[in-house]
Image 1 (cartoon, rainbow, N blue to C red):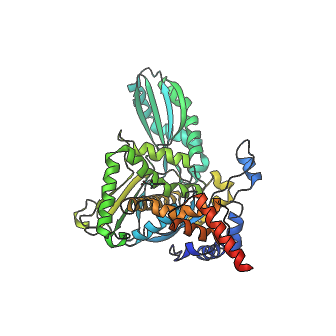
Image 2 (image 1 turned 30 degrees about the horizontal axis):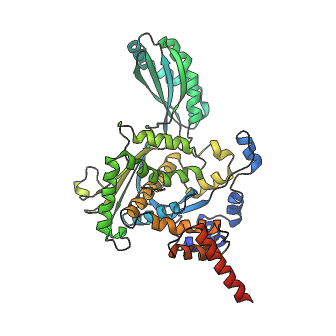
Image 3 (image 1 turned 60 degrees about the vertical axis):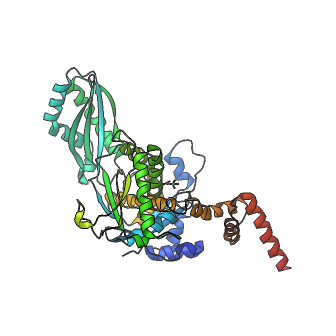
Length: 442
Ligand code: MEV
């Protein structure tokens, strides 16, 4: 059983951190280094993957810690360039642990294939016909994807939507099992469109998946005792109330909801990228889902528990006065095919996650999203976001000023404490430190 608690991990020098990670993951350090050494993707493979390649582009690969989901510990692979995202989400995951971690559930991995028609002579009759012949249509669709059928997936349902003025769209709901499913679904849409046109007499338009994958949602919940929320000089109850107010702000204002949701995606996208998944699809789906009521809304909301007995849904471990976070969003992720075929780093990321199904990966990514949201709201409701952010940002500024090795930490600490996180200040500090080393060496 993997543990996601590795106290002091962030303080270790990189080499030792790699050793600690390899030990927890049960792999050799050499395996970790070979998978991630060159960012997990060599230029020759890159050249075969997309067009016009002139190189590759690396990003940091980190481990999110402390995460517990459905009673199990997970190390979370995260690829992201923004300082403080990993630290903040790991810290919030630790708070959630105090209430039993994250409780997650997932829909079946069903994607939507859209076949669009216009100039349909009789929309009512066409709809009736398509619904009557649903089984035939599903069978035709399944014949186009034999490998998916062999893996236990397949077309589960057909829905017809009237878009007005002779426009009609047919949705085929396809269980993609452990694949993200874009190719499968697009194949199906193209395979059945001829028959649909024949039956309806309409003109075929687009045949493509929908990234509003609202048949493939995950739901995450956590309940946190106030004592776990205490922040510098702020009592737990006060922090809890601040988070609930911040949540209400996001519900009242789409301008705030967008930033609130960005904070959620800060936790989700790094996992999506680290496991070789399509983050554009995930982003498109998340924001379309956030706007499904016609008003852009927060994907996660926070409230104070009135106690497990009073809740509509029996809440595990939840007690009166605890902070409860809930989130729902579509997550179209795969653990087979796609980028995983070519990207060693993505395969390593998937191994790190320890998940066995695409649904489990989606729940894991979403848990990190809720953790990330909690971290942001807690900071915003107390000391503000800049303090923690600047402490970490100071490191990049120190590097930009030319600091290397141990000097990075020394310069970063000095400019942060002087409340002057700028490249000029870092250069001055670096000069001071290097000249004092030089004179000490003489
Ligand atoms: C920054 O990357 C994300 C936040 O703006 C999210 C939020 O405001 O909730 C801090």
